[in-house]
Image (cartoon, rainbow, N blue to C red; front, side, top):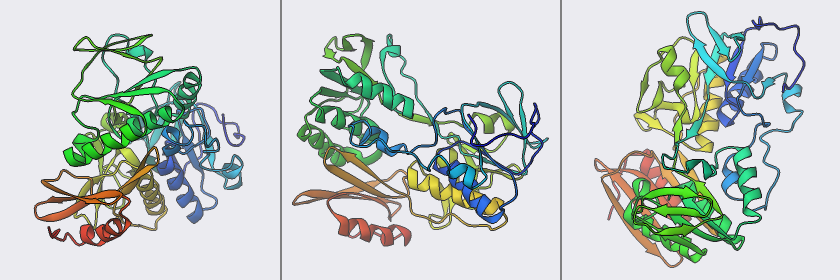
Length: 394
């Protein structure tokens, strides 16, 4: 599917300009920012996803619960009105930095002046017998399949205690489905936010009707549910594999771009080690001016901002990434908010409030993040503390 008609293209698309690989917020914002500066230079967005660009955060919340159906990132006619060539359902197989071409499956070549890699992430596969019986929740198609399966389900098992798994579990439980979360860690979100926060999240799940089984290993999945390594059977008409995602950096690796920690290394302008190639969103390990180091940002707002910076810089108007990453996670009626560098921390301090809590995170004597529930004053204060590399008074 294409947003507008081609002009006699064959195996080689002769028009050069900016190519964005990926139709999420990073790819779309890169294309939009570049187009705003150069109204007549060709801009192409290539994506393997067959669906029109959509928001992903609602997939595990409002969309799955049936409370929202309109999740388009842009109206259908927006691409034609801005003269952006959107090509859906096409797989990019190779980035040829020597010839400055993007090569797709089937051998079609797209020459570029500038290329933005915004390939996003792919689900980490679940390696157990019967894994094919589990549904994922990464794409619009995944969300539709899960929503349809849930209509006739009386029980569900969500494998994984991360953000998406917790959101999806609470959503399924809200529909009257007996839902269980099975995780390898003793509490949800342990690796990201620590034991104290995890215990609070476990209570939030329980308050929303979700059973949590921690320190558990899945041995097998079948059409009745999940069998744990202990032999315990957990009923699930629907099984969801929320086992995390992995940035899709295969194009960069094969092209010889510099990578580190499973991501593409960029400077503060989102420029990679290859000439006129940029990276944004999940795949990027970008230098953050305020953090004074490279930061992996994995969420929607960060991807949108990085895409805009890449597009502006490619257009000849360099911008620098200095934003403080932030995101929210809604589990039932509870919305957790995080603001910080997302790096490992050495110390954490939890403060309980009447109807919520705050967890402060510190590394090398500096504030690096805060997680809060119903504590907006702490959340706002954290922005200044983290940016200033301040010490958190206990």
